[in-house]
Length: 325
Length: 276
Image 1 (cartoon, rainbow over the protein chains, first blue to last red):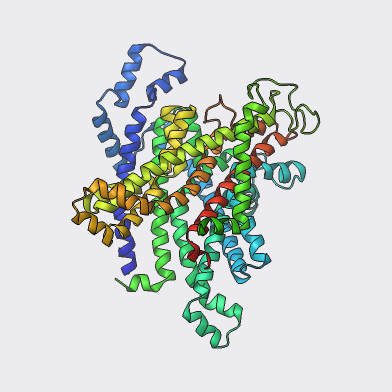
Image 2: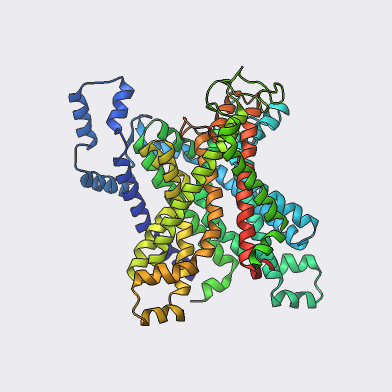
């Protein structure tokens, strides 16, 4: 229970951070050329100054900036993110529609990167400075330097255009109405390439951290004890080393959550997935500042939630954290 | 000089340095090898690489020389990556230095701001900045610098925390040195080496950020950028995939070179860490 209150306290401490972000980005967006009404008028094909004034009054845009900021924050407390003039829907509805693909993609990429990073990290650490280690580390370095969108495009060329194994984009097959397990399989097929594309750079990072962390733990005294007991190398690693070596990996999940969300902007654009990242891109192109601010709020919230979960996970892995002061 | 010798003993570091020198050489030689504007029409569109000796790497959708764009693109990538890194390191060391030296409420406020920047995804903030200030070469470079400073700030703060109560600083204080003198003249030179090494990571990420922005057509369209070319090539990906493939290899090479050099420097400056 201690750990829940500990993590809860850290969660509460992140509220001022969230408010700071919102105030900062809100003020920043005031500097943007054109406001919601300009976008709306452009959408309607122009209009006279009087109706523009009426619209500004309607949206509360005629107030002073501090008053507008106050209004915005007060509406946020009631979970009202405002209205998107481009989509003609409340921003919260637009964002909620786009959230599931992004969360699915992020979870899949994280699992992919975590699992393979772990496996290859262990393999590299077990053969340190021999050829498997050199090979794995070199591939890791190359993955780290590969721009994700470029890897995605090349994967499309190979797997969708030449081999025709996988779809080149989209979230599911729109032509065929599918239900149940077939729909799940169809979505999985569509997400295979995006997952690999987004996960690649994180795979490289996890692999490197896992290798270093394994090497460090392998030198500790309790590992020597385990070996002296006569355990074989596999048992030493699965039973004793792995759990301890995992800690830095879990920390990294929290640190990289934001980077991953940012990466999904690009990956979703490459594979035309209807997710949050693509929404962010579209709202920049269409100057839909209300939606953009909503996305800033939701993505900061996502990062905070991921960090909360990581705190809890951390305590499960290492009981010393919840026991100690 | 031990560090230099250690650097050249590592094959990976030497490969990185050679690759980096090649990219820098390309940037320097660009206007000499390709005197014409790289964004002007050069020939028939979509000539495959090696098909026409005039265009060793072929031409893009609108008949511009890909080789020229790759050479000029090296300039843009290094320029944006370099300047953005300098901006990020400058802001980061400044904030980290004050937070670490003064502690207390100064540290509290500065770290809250840092945390806010770290909670908001980098790329999302970059999109906001581009949406507000537009996408010219200058604004994009500054924006990338502005989103990249938190990690160097934390690093500098940690260094300052461990250095600020060392004996030589206390000696300086007893001598009556001002805070600013101590920060800039005494602590900073000692705190800087790990930050400088970390600059290679910042630069690698900055180059990747710029290319992603350019790929989304949110960077300056009036310069020859590798990311721009990949974005253009996307329209003809089905058949002429080389238009996207070639600049991607250039980005990969540059980022790889920068990270290898950074890692080599790190291992050369902290030889004890390497043995782990």
